[in-house]
Image (cartoon, rainbow, N blue to C red; front, top):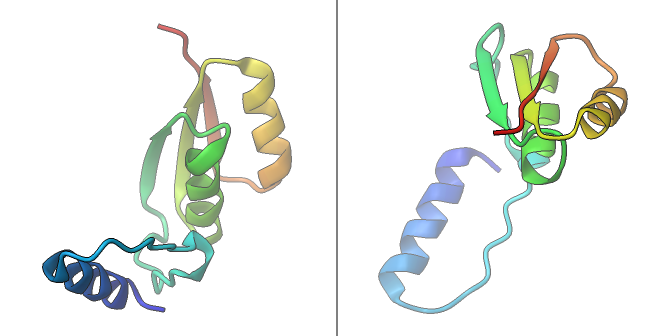
Length: 93
């Protein structure tokens, strides 16, 4: 499903004032190469939604920097992504 369709669906739900659960799978979004060779920084990219966003953006051709507080978790994320185009920065503020 295209991103515009998701946005339209969300707008309709908000306007109708009905409570509904909306599930959007990042893997379903097709960016049509708009992310190719773009540089993206994701804070908290070693796990959770940040990790899956990094994985998707890399698969779409983006250069990604992910940050995290735990160096071991960052290394594990890189192994799971197992593709070039990722720079990790260990940050604990």
